[in-house]
Amino acid sequence: MAALDLVTPVLSDGGTWRFPANEPLRLDSGGVIEGLEIAYQTYGRLNADKSNAVLICHALTMDQYVASPHPVTGKPGWWPRLVGPGKPLDPARHFIICSNVIGGCMGSTGPASINPATGRPYGLSFPVITIADMVRAQAMLVTALGVDTLFAVVGGSMGGMQVQQWAVDYPERMASAVILASASRHSAQNIAFHEVGRQAIMADPDWRGGAYAEHGVRPEKGLAVARMAAHITYLSEPALQRKFGRELQRDGLSWGFDADFQVESYLRHQGSSFVDRFDANSYLYITRAMDYFDIAASHGGVLAKAFTRARHVRFCVLSFSSDWLYPTAENRHLVRALTAAGARAAFAEIESDKGHDAFLLDEPVMDAALAGFLGSAERERGLI
Amino acid sequence: MTNAVIREDFREILRLVRPGSRVLDVGCGEGALLDLLAHEKQVDARGLELSAEGVAACMARGLSVVQGDADLDLDHFPDRSFDYAVLSQTLQATRRPRHVLDELLRIADRAIVSFPNFGHWRVRWSLLSRGRMPETKALPLPWWSTPNIHLCTLADFMALTEDLNLRVDASAAFAGRGPARPMNPASAIENWRSETCLFMLSRNGTPPSRELPAASGDLFGG
Image (cartoon, rainbow over all chains, first blue to last red; front, side, top):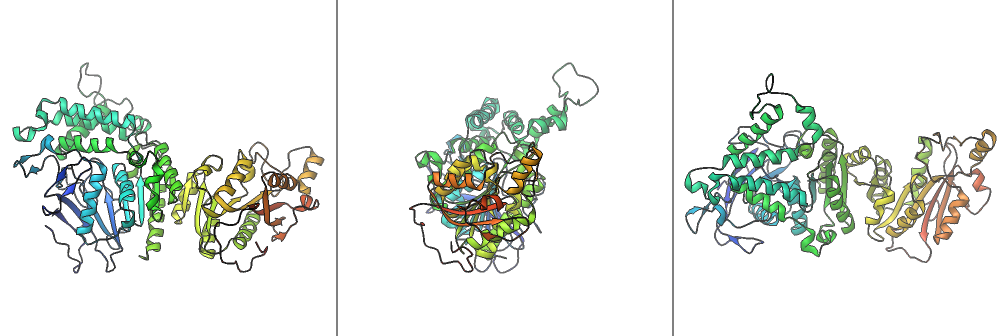
């Protein structure tokens, strides 16, 4: 366990927090995870009055390496526009926490972990988890790191779902919330695309009913196809057309099924590089958690009722005009519920042709809005 | 409308709004008025704005502003959730001004509304003498590009307030670049001489949902 040293200045720390058997994670399904492990990274230091902590919630295929190099790919942190020196979330001022979701494959307990009951990898014996389960585990970690209330909880896409769940379940532990390109429930289309991905994985002969680890194989082809299909949903049609059009890989057609078109080659690369860093069963479990996500359902079908305890929380919701995965209408639906609940909500639709992934990309209007929102939230909390 | 008129408009609103109150600015633009109210009167400032650029500018100022449409999005606010709802030079640009005004006084105890008076003598003279749609300082754009689709006179507005059973708590008029002056909206001459009108309205027979400390330097005793 990596002890958090509050005395010496550390820019980055992290490791895996192991919860003792008497602190199990109780799941929405009724199941229990004993010996829960949460892999996390922190940046910056918790200040004396413990008021500068920020939790970043990651999206489906991201992880805790929000601002430090990825141990597998070697790529820099995945959200450099938001987190880093001189950025709206700055390790010099904030104590930034980012943890791998449960069910994930970067160190937190998930289907690839060893089931203590059997001594073998969980595989499909891992319990089905929900977004609320992920958040419950994060709350345990935040407590373990010595933080009572978070200055901000921030996330995009599935990360934004976790932020909403935080505001529903732990509003007293947060002052502000940033929700980007997200939704309060999965639509039929969202579920449909996830089902395509899951079927691709389960149709791979190497999936072996989820027990591939015990057979020393991996369903790489299925997982790659799942990623290829999903990747299309992260981009917009105009962005795909602008980037690739009908451009060919080489002169002339192959009159076969090689990657003639650049867009095919691009998608194949996305698929094959993804399998190096992601676990197929984690993909099944996390997409399932997203499909089950429907905040209003557990509040009599009225979304606003879910946020009545979060009136003191300042919300910033941003959507992107070309995002057809979690479109503006879904984000606006959330904002109306927040408004009806009496919460302080700021909302804008950012003009962008970059699709769903725009929340991670170069969008100056978003940058200005986020910096302004977080800055004023900091002033309100007395941090600056 | 010129910037000078807008600034006078804001100055009056600043005087009317009591410190520490809850204010919704409908059509808040880049948040200049909300910023002023938040800093000068420590209000809980919220806004509704149609343009994404305006909302982003408001967020960059740290204001809680939601992108939305006065015609469509007011019904998502709970009853009496604000002390004041401000609609500055926007009523005449809404599709359903009567509904909007009614909604303002559902979600707030008081509505502060300003609009260009189509009964002003320059407007009347412009139409009479030229036979063309008026273009004045308060209404500077030609008919084919103006956002103003529901212009009214002071007398029209008074008839609407009576129809909706609203009480006038304060009223002021501006002309040109001059400062605000108190204005008796029932007087026929004011319909000729008031270029821009500003009202603070409440519903007849409805006490405020909570008592506020008295404002200092309140021009109209509102």
